[in-house]
Length: 223
Image (cartoon, rainbow, N blue to C red; front, top):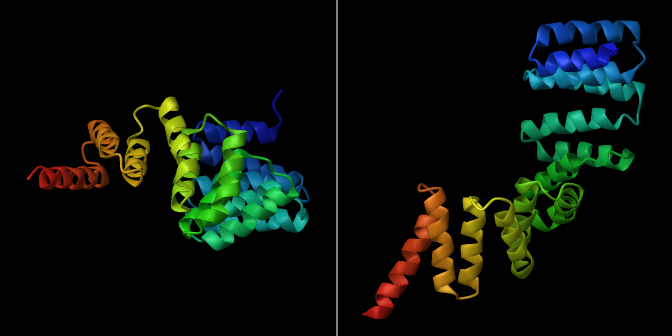
């Protein structure tokens, strides 16, 4: 027999949001001192883009329990979606400090640094996300990108290759391997990667520009 929280979460999954809200409301009325009801209601409100009310529910959960890691995580997601990366960062950090060992929390924390162009600070969190979920292509790719942006080109290369092992149709991994090949002054390998990126995604403007530059170099060399 499912408890009311589980029932409400199932209703959310079925997109029966009004029914789920009614159930979460009943849970809170029955147990007004239990933060779980507020956190779940906050998650529902965030899901339907009522972020202001969601914030109030998360904050109420934290008032009831300073160590409610998932309430901080909910707040962090709320701020992340609003592109308030410093506030998101603070709350992801708090959730992790309390003990939330979720790959997604480390990934999003890393991405708060990435979006602020603090690539080196992003690295340990993105690395941890890939350790917790090594099959997640997005985690791997963003980790590789942060390595490249931090000028750790030699470390980035095998990460992008790993991305292609998991998904050989990842146009951005091909593009970045092409850029690395340019750094290595290997124009033919670079061109091959740019061509593959364009075969997968014909409108890939960066790959198109890079390919054009290589062709110009070759054409000028042949003159």
